[in-house]
Amino acid sequence: MLTPNKINFYTFFKLPAAWWSGVRVAILTSKTCTTYVRYGWRNQNPFRSMYFAVQAMAAELSTGALILKHLEEKDLKVSMLVLGMKSKYYKKAIGKIKFICLDGDKINHSLLGLEEKKSKCTCILESNAYNESGDLVASFEFEWTFKLK
Image (cartoon, rainbow, N blue to C red):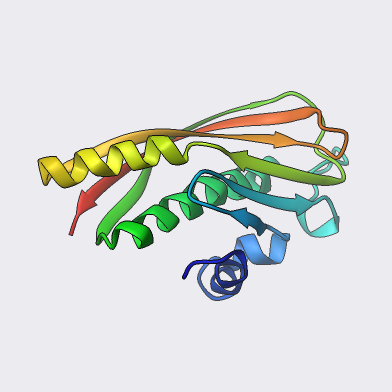
């Protein structure tokens, strides 16, 4: 069963840049995934905030882990790839930043369509980043593609 601890262990070996930057999964259900990263010297930029690429890693992991959760529940063998990404930054990312993806239903709908069509499909997932005060720091949009193996 896929859990936040298992994904965090996995990142150490398979996504070391994310792990060393401090990206971690906090919550993983079939509806939502929350990741977080705390601003520090390992992930800083010259402007005394979190480097945008670290934020993108945490946001992508919040969407990707949610996809993996659905694939595990459906017992599907799927190739998945990010086709594109859009991001907007609203505030300096300092402190602990949470990245929340609430698109579990979108993933479920896309995978059901994939099973029916037996081909490939795409799905656009959102992840929003919030600081410790609950202010929106950044928003991300990832276009994922799925293909049955």
